[in-house]
Length: 423
Image 1 (cartoon, rainbow, N blue to C red):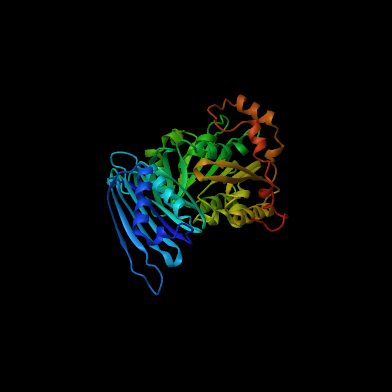
Image 2: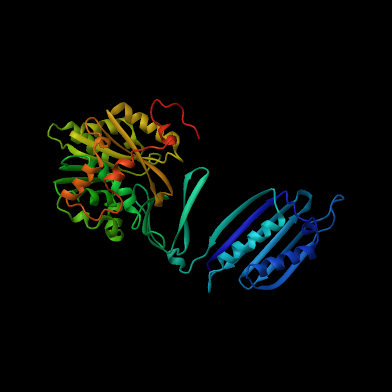
């Protein structure tokens, strides 16, 4: 029963007025549009309404299609039309034909304004929610999405809603509270820069702390450095780790079984505060805040208290990396985060890259009181990759390391002291 449902509300139509009042003209338009789209007309029925207060009445009509239906309603007094197209995709993919039918009618009615909606209906396998469209909102006005062929697991943990899907585009995909976190086929766009921006700038990292990152992706990248002796993964939600171990091996690649990795389940800020308060507490060459977005319940970990404590846990020469949101869609949030980092650390190096799963240009930052990643030449980065025997990098190299810190002007505007961000 799965299919595509399209609706459109048209205003100020500048078409031949007969299309809004004459059932014969409207029927002929619909017949031609259906045939042109390659759909199969079974029957048509139209009903004209009488004149109203001296004005022509509208028409309501429907086309019964072998693939499903087309419904049309007109309001000549306001030049309005509503359209409803639905096709079943049981035996064939009729979605392109539905799109073509709607496009033909939009051209014919020539609206001054229009509002359209696209809805995926039903599923081949309802128990798995197959073929559902997964949408995420970048801000109040912009969303994007991917089709899922199968929902592998859904659960609400003590902290958040967790979902794992199979998708045609990205393979297995993890979503938390309705937001994309990581996927099998694009994870390297995110995890490699998050891990290696600081790890390759550092001459000899031996210890690392990953806060969040329960999918294991950042840990797997950091563990590629042979000199790394210990990595603490502090994840709030044990269910994220369980789902990753069960479904996302292509992302963590067995990192949870590495003897150097110590898993700590619980409040990450509490863990950092305990280490900072203990004179014998651990200090780290690298800290990665691999968290959900700054406008989620993880928000306190992006705040001044958490970042000050994280700074206290950095060993001499150490650096911290975090993502800060999209400079395109979350400009004010990025500006606030950069301003806070600038007050806390001597070196703040924001960088940017395109993350396909996130659908946009994404912002990250590497901060430290002593280590400046931009001061490390591309040749040094490439040499460290070779001498450390780091293989299987799909994104990162010396040239990329340098290039990612070159900010476009709209991103530079968000730096402290650059004035109010403009759209």
